[in-house]
Image (tube, rainbow, N blue to C red; front, side):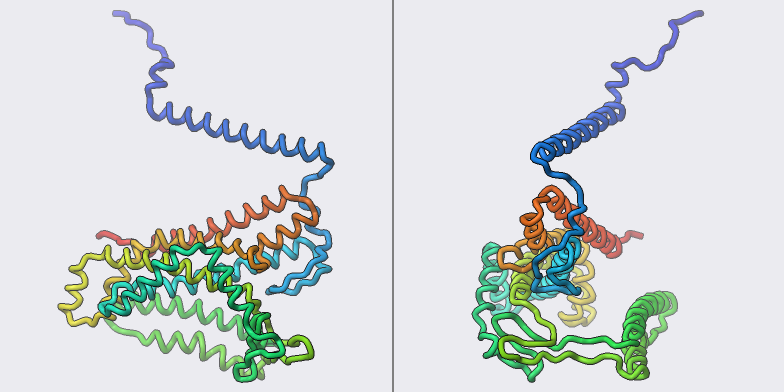
Length: 392
């Protein structure tokens, strides 16, 4: 018995296959995206060639000819554009890291206080959250900056213990000056932190397996504090402080924190902290009330119940939206340009005006903020994976 010869799958059958159809659509989408990017690059190159502009990052080696008031590394107006951008990037990282730490502490505190059984405390926390969340961040940045610039002049600086001076140019405080040997102390301190982490993990695993406690707190204090301090004393205390001294017109020596940095940091902290407070409150309320009742039945206090029972479970709900708030804070730091804090965007804008390389500067902005956002998301996703609820 002979039948009809079998052929491969027809075009109609391939099209009805959901996986094949999806692969075709994905291929066409990628092809269209490549064509669109190629069109943008080609069109931009043609337009730049018509006006006599050359693309490239060689201009980063040119002299900057402008100063930066807040800098974490040495920089003068004779340095290059590339170093100026590095100073601006460090300023962005500085205010972002300080803001994330402070906003997290403030947000967790206010989120817990909103659920307090004390009527006055709960209402004050509510007023803070509802007020700050509804005032534009830019307005808050300008408000705190205006408030700080109304402080006394340099000659009338407010002194704290004769070491810290507060005026309308910022805060002047003693600067640490490291001498030979201090690097060894710093390395010992960092090594102590790493060692304490592993000791804590080992002690926790040992207690879970055998039930025997281990004095990890005292061991960690010895590793993080005791060993570096002993090494510091043995090396002859290789550190001294450069105390600021008031001159005729300004202070000399020490380290200055500009009012722009303080205003931007505080505004980002207060604003983002209000949103984090609501995230924390929602996470706590997501924990079953039976958990709290069970803890109270065991005789745990309210504070211990919150620390050991509620918050560890609430973190699984808090961490994902908390990541978004961290990303928002980092990106909102670009509002620094409104008050003259020279972050990456402000410094890049100055370089753009001087050199005319707008495409390259905007590309650097995009690359930096994309890298910061992806790095923050990756870390928070890792942490979220660590605190996830594991079913057995």
